[in-house]
Image 1 (spheres, rainbow, N blue to C red):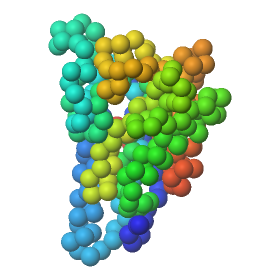
Image 2 (cartoon, one colour):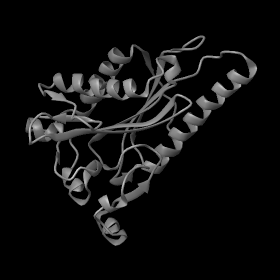
Image 3 (cartoon, helix red, strand yellow):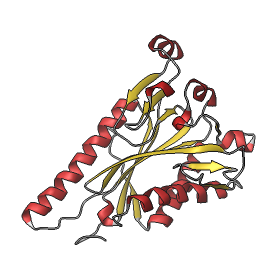
Image 4 (tube, rainbow, N blue to C red):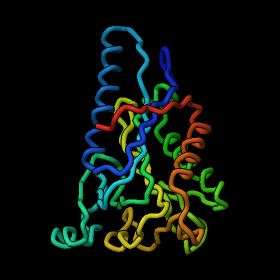
Amino acid sequence: MTYGNPNRRIQIIHAGLVDYQSAWDFQQRLFDEVVELKMQNRNSGEHHPTPNYIITCEHPPVYTLGKSGDKENLLLSEAQLEALGAKYYAINRGGDITHHGPGQLVVYPILDLENFYTDIHRYLRDLEESVILMLAEFGIRAGRYSGYTGVWIDEDKPEARKICAMGVKCGRWVTMHGIALNVNNDLRFFEHIVPCGIKDKDVTSLQKELGFAVDFYSVRKILLEKMQYVFGWEAFEKTEPFA
């Protein structure tokens, strides 16, 4: 289902290394602007196309807890967090606790799904599929682990391990938050949480699986290409400053 004048163009914003709160505030601003335009369309009977955005970035060390998560899955005190040089936020996405840090590719789609389809489960599966296809370009076979979102290696074996976490918010069919793909990041930070609330599974990265650091920007480029293929959008880069 879409509505009049669906806009499938994507404005891509490469934000670099950015503070988590700043990125969250920016996402929220874009989200609110899209929702406001949708409400104006509904009230006026007009159908001005709504924009879609993709923000790519990295974050300094931070732990984030989704609204359905358990704070007990953070295994650090405030003093230990400070000593580690990490921040902590309870946020409004789905999912449990995860970690973000330099070398991890974070992708935040702010999409009006009514420009594409109104199916949040399909949206989650399409995000996963984009990552699975990207990993295949590096010779890594990945898949889905039954009952959980995200992308896993050896998902059908006891040694299943997570390489990409996901958590989204959707309101009035507009999305925010997104995916965190472990590329070259320091996995030791995950030792201080129960990642995604799953106690018996490990976390991995492209670097760990391949045995060498990969080019971060190549990973980003390929992932965006796979997302464009899966979602069928027309992408273009937005160059105005991240603020």
